[in-house]
Structure formats: C-alpha cells, structure tokens
Length: 239
Image 1 (cartoon, rainbow, N blue to C red):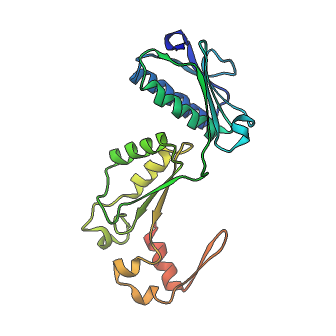
Image 2: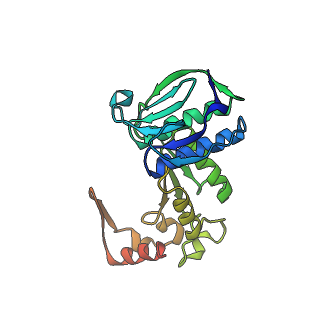
Image 3: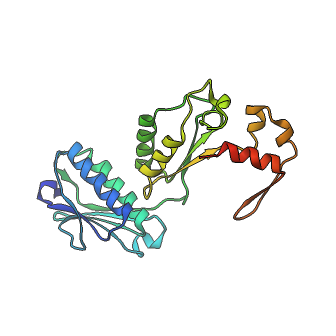
C-alpha cells in the first residue's frame, strides 16, 4: 500500500497548462478527501506524486495513461498531455474514496473514441446559471468528456435584435467569453454554437432576406451569397 501522508508534494514534468490543471485537481481532491495539503510545483524530480508525458505509454495510444502506485510514490504518465490529465482524474476518483492509503498497483487506460462530446441545448430547455454551467463543465471533465458545446438560438442576447430574446433569459456576450476564458487550455474544450444563419428566419420574420441564401460549406470556410443575408448575419454576431 501507499501511505499518502508519506508523500511530500505534487510535481509535473513541464510548464504545460493541462498538466498544471491536472496537478491542481489532485491537490483539491486530497484536501477534500483525506484532508492532506500537498504543494504543487514544476519539476522533473518525482518526490511524491509526479505527472509526466511519455509517448510510449499505453502502447502509444492517443490520450492513454498509466497510473502507477507504489509504497513510495504515485506516478501519472500520459501518452500526451491529455492522457496525463485523464490519468490524474482517475487518481482524483481514488483520493475521494480513501482516508490515508491507496493500494499499490497500476492502471493503464485509454479511450475507445478520441472525441467524447456533450451538447447542451439551452433554447428548448431551462437556461442555466453560470454557476450551473461551471459545475457542469467540471463534472464532464471528471467523466473524461473532452468536448462541450453550448447551443443557443433565441436565448442569446443579440445586441442589435433584443426582440429575439426579450421573453427569454439569454446568455450574454460577456458570459460566453467568461466561460471560454475560464476553461481555456483545459478539458473539455468549450465551444459556443450560436445559430444565426437559418433560425433568424423564424426568430425575426426576415424570410425575404433568408429564403434565397445559399450557404456552401468548404473545408475551411463558409461562403454566403446575397448581401442582405450577409448584413443580417453580421448584425446578429456583432460584438
């Protein structure tokens, strides 16, 4: 077994934002669970709990990880930074279920699906508070979900079209930016889907502007033909 009080600190191999976030999650779990306060720092030395990246771990599978527990140390090794992050989350789950010891052993894990996403539609259901959204993203991270999409239609506060959201409790530009900034360089990747090309016909009654719009998707761009529609869409996404 590994006696947690014998471990001195949490270190991570490089100044990587994802590894740093993983180390902080372990630190919080240790405080919440067994009540141990470990300092966190960047170091290549393993003097307690150490997070590192090694491309050969988990047979080189992307996002794979190894969680190795010995009587003297705990090592989380990721095939990549994402793998180290998910391996750390496995350790977080164990820390929440123990008082002061963990069994020795090794857990090797990797995902069957590289993209594991959740979309939350806030146009057909309750618009969540920011507190709820933050808690949801944190929970999804612990489930090793790596994509989160927030889908909005009339529940987004279009600045030039208040009539769209007047009877709703909309998400604002500032709230979307705060959500993006808070979870930047973390997992899951947070993206906001604001419908502004097709739904305005329904929301604003501008059928004459939208009916003849031709939207052609390309690998790296979307081209719109018809100036009226371009002007309309531009007004919807105006910052």
